[in-house]
Length: 320
Image (cartoon, rainbow, N blue to C red; front, side):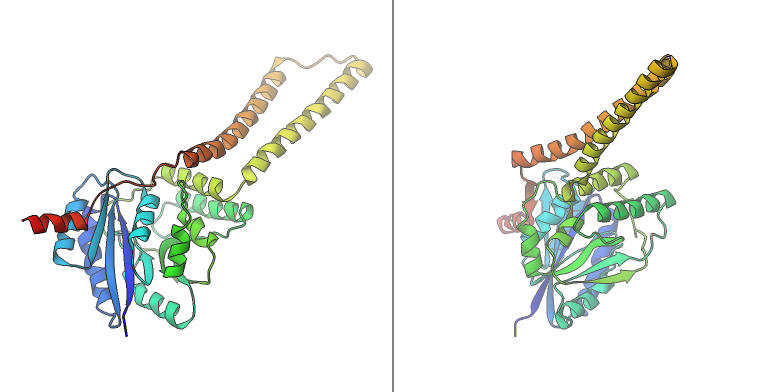
């Protein structure tokens, strides 16, 4: 009987310090699988340190290690997409190299997906221990907001770390979007999903690549990708301001004709102008976000560009 193959995809951006530690842990877990083979797909997302050199070292000593190296930094979403397209496993998992996604959960995830008839097993953090309080607060607010606006459910604390069947992977890869928000795509494709909960784990090495500003931009991308409610809000604000302005006009006319009360001075006028201008800019910004995403989609540019893979490394070996 042929063994199942699990593809482990690891997006890497400046993970030189963490790679050896990650490989040690995932290799330890691989020894627990007696009826399953593993392949490791490292995606070097234009790292500026020696991440690629470390990956090549692993590829030279372990035939299970494959890699993709981008021509520049295209972002984690592109790295995950490249890994999914390259994967050949019957089951596929995504992991961060910093060990915040514990490899020790993989055997249990595989057991669940095989024995309990699930299509994918996701992981979620039950807390955000170690994160700045302000960051945790805004993260919780984001999930509450997007779940109210979007028809696709986003699970608070959900990680990209999950084990998926080949059917799920093929469904995700078939979504050839340029502006990708994987947490939403995982939910969008549907399929039967079970969640494993675990305590938040700190990075084993290196520094996080996600600043507050980058997370804020990522949150906006998620909202724009999975709901058009902001456009409705912009339209509603326009109607509301028109209604308020109409009421003000009626009040001013009545006060002037009935009481001879002159119109208020410039301070109130300036406040009104600033308020209305701010609302206009907000609405234009919302519309601009959707237009920008549409513009990028219509260009049909590739999500990523590959500079080299392990096949190039093997060619160099043969020439030598």
